[in-house]
Length: 505
Image 1 (cartoon, helix red, strand yellow):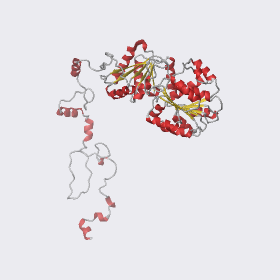
Image 2 (spheres, helix red, strand yellow):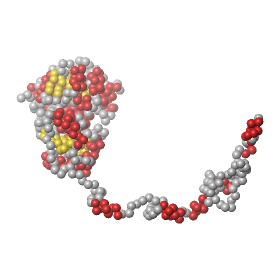
Image 3 (tube, helix red, strand yellow):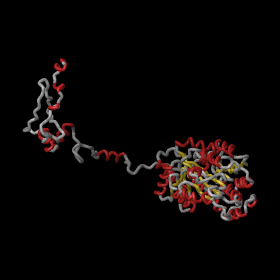
Image 4 (spheres, helix red, strand yellow):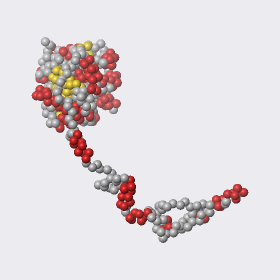
């Protein structure tokens, strides 16, 4: 059996490995470390949870033990798709390089540029970054990649899913052609294969398991919940599944497809007495790290997550993974359930499949080339009636006997009018007398006199005219002087002429 001492690693690295408690390398580690130490390009394909991170950190530390980094010019570069995965790589580097003088910098979002610039200015041996933040520093003129000797791309298939492939290609172009490249992925999509053919030079390919396979240590199951109609039904079903597992469910990660569902499920579990917390991309980075730390140390029992936590995170001793939603991409199922059953331990993965998810579920079974066992959880998906809904038909009948509230002109509490005539009379009786008096014009006020032509007749109307002077008041009551008719004395002469006179002229 191969041991770490057989892999030609540096003595200081071997000492750190022994202190972490590892003695025997995993298949991907035993296959990737020797060619990496020889300076060859490596293409590693292995399912999640097989120790790919140590496959490149251990040889990197051994090869970088001699030399010194210059300001803004890192000697090696590790690209990771998410902040959490980049932070995990940084933790592995700290653990394995603690007996060396190598330095590192972590470039991820959610952290001040000023702090990261200060680290880069001092010079770092290992630069661990997400693609977006790395390019931000480069475009600001704070980073030079011409001295990179080793470049690592971790979780390349996740990079593809997140749309980072154009950024990866650009970063490859910024590094020297003579660099050594270590490329790791769980699956080999056609786009990933194209990149490896373009940027890797005669790589040593290590494939320790068929792409997109699940670990034999994981007990899988699915609940076909076709009768589940609402989010509340699905949340109750999840709770029943957790309770059915009993004491065997020490902790678990619950995966949802949407961030809004992550928050809703975490809130529901908290309400029902479970120690749960959400984690997704919209949360602050410091909050996400605190949540992960709490889950790692056992102070948090359930982690409700989006796919941001599905790839590459090394969270030990996860007993259960619950797929609250069937993942949209079949490959994500492999990565999700790979959070349990790690390092040779047993794990359980349970999925909820509603009617709309059946197509995606069929894709998963085709990918893993197995039929996932069905779980029959009796009574788990029964819908509960809302508390405020009538329970019986007799209660509905009682509710119909109650007088219904209607809106009327009479105000609150007024009975509805029996017909239009009664309503009209009621309105008339209720109308204030002062308003009626205001509407009628005063009888002792004479209308303003105005000269009119004989052929014109003034329009007659029974309704009093309203003017701008006030409600129900005529113009003659206002002290504005005599009324002006037409243009007064200022009218031009041609207007005052008759039509016949104008025709004659």
